[in-house]
Image (cartoon, rainbow, N blue to C red):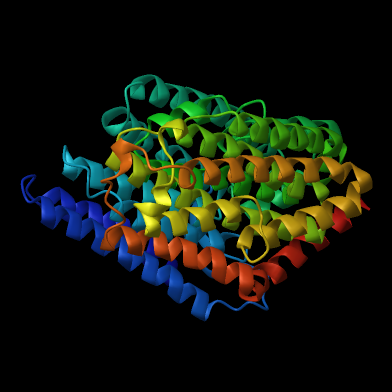
Length: 490
């Protein structure tokens, strides 16, 4: 068994141990769940140590034939695109569990659901067979539906149903596209990503275009991109805060990750749709930013800001150049850290005050100085302030976009200004003015909460001030992808 199988198995073993643990032993259940997520986090960190940054190809490959007739294979691998996402998934799952100590009902099923969700997320990023990828993709739906529907807010049932209907609807288009490509595969040749990439080259260009459109809908719903983002704000608002961390921090990245794999497989069709992609990206960025600006609910604000930031990822992908592709992976990592930290802090604040209305707050810096410090740094990162990882990501977006579209990137600058406006508005309303009577006795962040928030904030600053390791991790893979795209679209 290789290291990727061991990593993928960690949450499964955690589920089995939790299943054998009595419901009443709450502290033991929490400890077991945190232990196995910590093991997965350690293994993902170890991958950073042993991963060869100079090799852009898949590494640590594992392959076992599952069905000879269908050609389905249990194939795992990792490269400079998937490794940051694997690390982000394990990190945010650990943070989400640290933020879950307020969950007091159905504790056993809650922790089993989170470990099952982690298993699905890791499978998506590690799978190198499209059939296996699709199984893991669908596997994330059930635990996430349960987590929102059982532990969510007042409108949790509508939110969970919207999420499932949107995502399953998008998955149908993705499945149709996979079947379309498989028609050009030799009989019983399997569904490996590398083999299907070769098969896609033999498709007529008009068929490639339709196939790409199916993938765009399927992955675009999950990202989400405008206008298939309707499920996101309600799901974020109604989901428990630890689940919002995972939903925004990593589950949205599954869509962007899949789309990057597809555009490398279908670069000619992507070039034909380039104008549409950049239009959707720019509209989504500005639209999401404006809606975030007018929200009074803090969770809604972060949710709409995610639409705006994922628009930046789509813009990076649409450039089809090396700088833009690097910007996409950097923006995915940056948004995962920033959005995860924001949802964590907003959730911790809501637990203390039972309100998310920004108008109910003022001058929290006097009563919650530690919270104020972390929240301010996170909001500065959300607006792309130099010194944060978001600045590095957005700089790549500006440069890559300017190389492709020139002065059209003024609209990207407008989106960044809108993001700065709602970030500064939030800082002003949360931390300035007189202390309101009902806010005088709020408890500041406790030790475990400080650890959870501190890890994310330190990562935001560390990769902002020293981005070289993060860039070098993905450079070889991005160069390889860019070479493939350049050769196909010449």
